[in-house]
Length: 172
Image 1 (cartoon, one colour):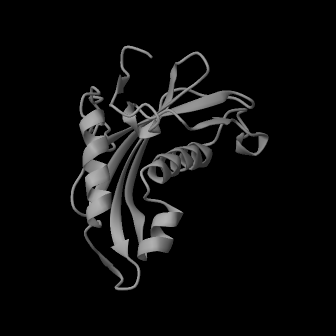
Image 2 (cartoon, helix red, strand yellow; image 1 turned 60 degrees about the vertical axis):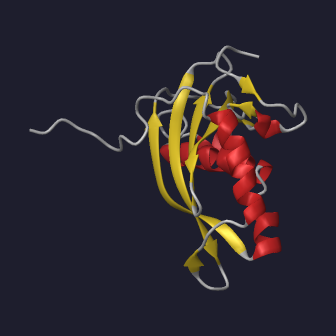
């Protein structure tokens, strides 16, 4: 366990470790652009897949939709491209539950290469949508309790300074 990882009481629970690191992928040839590096859409796909892996571990993925008729909808994502990667590089996601409330979940995911160097970051905001009513609605009590449990573990992870910063460029 590294210095920036913390654990909760249940060692069998993958979300009891912060950051959550179960997602790993290898850069595919179809993700490579004409410059010989992974294209921006592929970074978005990898971050999406990593977040989906974490949401599934939280019980907020496809089985959640099937059981409740509710699903998480992405309403905002901000990606920072830190370093180029090439075909066959192995990427690991380090995801934290930044915060949540009765209807929202906010995640931050850091992608690192095999050396542990930062490759990209993604910050995403999700809303819980009742698909039958076609409106944003509160999480069921069991999901709220689960989010609160995981939040306590993830709250001790230092937050990156760029959280919530959005796109910035010097003004002329």
